[in-house]
Amino acid sequence: MTTSAHKFSEEEQAGVYKAIYQRRDMRHFIKQPVDAAVLDKLLHAAHAAPSVGMMQPWRFIRITDPELRIALHQLVEQERVQTAKALGEREQEFMRLKVEGMLECGELLVAGLMDRREEYQFGRRTLPEMDLASVACAIQNIWLAARAEGLGVGWVSLFEPQAVATLLAMPEGSKPVAILCVGHVDHFYDEPMLQQEGWINAGDIDNVLMENQWDSASAEQSHQRKRSS
Amino acid sequence: MTTSAHKFSEEEQAGVYKAIYQRRDMRHFIKQPVDAAVLDKLLHAAHAAPSVGMMQPWRFIRITDPELRIALHQLVEQERVQTAKALGEREQEFMRLKVEGMLECGELLVAGLMDRREEYQFGRRTLPEMDLASVACAIQNIWLAARAEGLGVGWVSLFEPQAVATLLAMPEGSKPVAILCVGHVDHFYDEPMLQQEGWINAGDIDNVLMENQWDSASAEQSHQRKRSS
Image 1: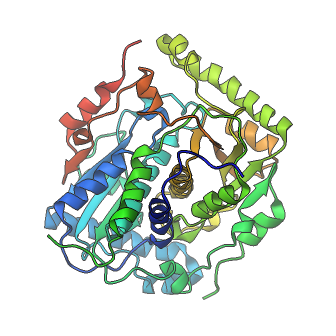
Image 2 (image 1 turned 90 degrees about the vertical axis):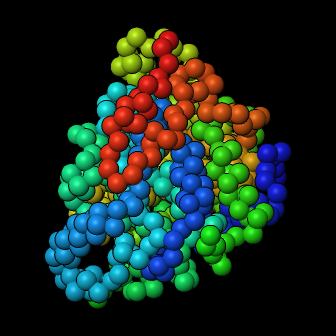
């Protein structure tokens, strides 16, 4: 066995894995403010994320105006109804799920892609969507740091991006990709909420791991997770 | 100040932030095998990532065939030349950068999006690209866990996705989005390698944070980071 001199201490490692495994996509929050210094730590953690060609394409708009929060919530509510319709036979089941905690969470952030991204070609000539991957890495940093701080985060993507962009005066070329609910929680879900609620089962890791080439049999099994209503 | 009962211990928190801040996008590796049990921990960490509607769209293909590794490297080398040309006046400067460590790293993984993603509408009706965001969160988990294990990770996106898909017999609808170099390193860069090498400066966090609406002045400043060659 080869070990590394750069390895963290056992306690530090435990913290990293605990954050990874106890992090949840939260939709239930308690109405309590988030300490400003902690929010600052989370945003700095985001800004330490990797990005393609170091373009740092993320932008975070903190929503402090209560009316703006309500307006954003209304946009999400509109899309929730549209999504339910698109789900067909699972429409009613979907409508019973709590899919966001925007009115309860202590802090609301809109995360988006900056404008003028076409100026950045490094690592994106054939995969321009790597800019979104970078934003997602930044959000995952927030998610894990928040868990370490004892705070929950929920990533809401139920919205028409152009409607949110217009509401926040975002320029052409930029794009909102997440409404992030950040806040105190009564408890973290023991398992992913959508699994708890019977929407879908977590997949077996063996079905997402392959060697040297695609494995159709494994891939097929991973599609059998959806539960019937 | 409001604190949370769910907060980690100081040591655990320190581990999380240390991983976030000391993680680097590595291109320099030493030729040493990665312990199988550690690789397994990294892949399990990936599978614990959040995903839109819990679709878990990530697939990881471990490359153990040395000839396949060389073939993948050749595809990246082809795209490296194409990217350099696309960069115009910075072509030569780009060609001098070390942009991948595929032939040295202990483990090579191809991360991709599964096929049949159109069956998953939850959180994706208006933002179908959330599947990629989920894969990126999984990769960020690998990146942070690897740092805790003392291992480096580099995300290479310099390739034509269809060429990689063909090489790995990936079905229509699936898509490779990352070639991940995972391995032992002599040392981690003190700062992002592209900054060390004078390619680009890290941006000021103030220029990516806004309140209630887009801030054009901040956004403009963040575009001034590119260094002249």
